[in-house]
Length: 234
Image (cartoon, rainbow, N blue to C red; front, side):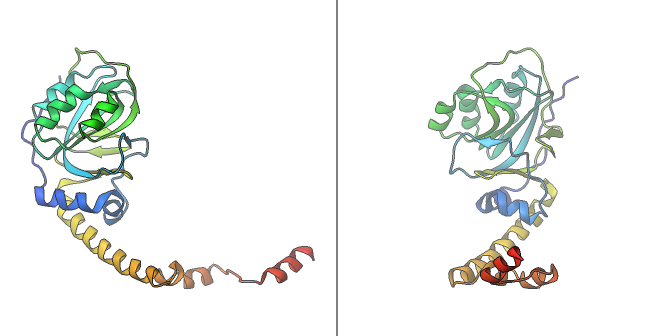
């Protein structure tokens, strides 16, 4: 029997917005390289970076009924996260649903299926990360679940988790770890700022990242080109 869970807890807005500022790569690294959704989820536009609390949805193959059900559960600052119960690339989502979500302050859509009306979605500035683009429409009649844990693109996403998405992909941050991941992201950004200054001053990764002992331990041998050629000809 389908279930719609109402009013799940969400991460604090300040934490969510701060994670958006750092982006997917930094957040992924900051939480020990976990939480990254599969690379087949790609943005339909570029130069967009969002974060929001997940409203999770399961949909039947070729049926977008539950997306319509989920709209009612969306609040300002959310991201709709949709997974079909079996693989399907059909166009589950277009400009009309986007208009409804945007009116509620939803920040974007992540869907492991297809979307359509891409030009319209871009014109209305509604961000989408999807598995496919397909004009093939879906039917209605089968209801799935809303705001329950879902499996999407190789990860489990819970309602209220923080979704961060940009040109690099999509990463999920568990709601209860969001503050800690934010602190780790801040520390990583500060470390990278120091490294960036060293690179700008002309240093290279071997020294900035203290890689020379690693290279030496591997037994790496430096040899002049002419000597190397003589060795190859011997």
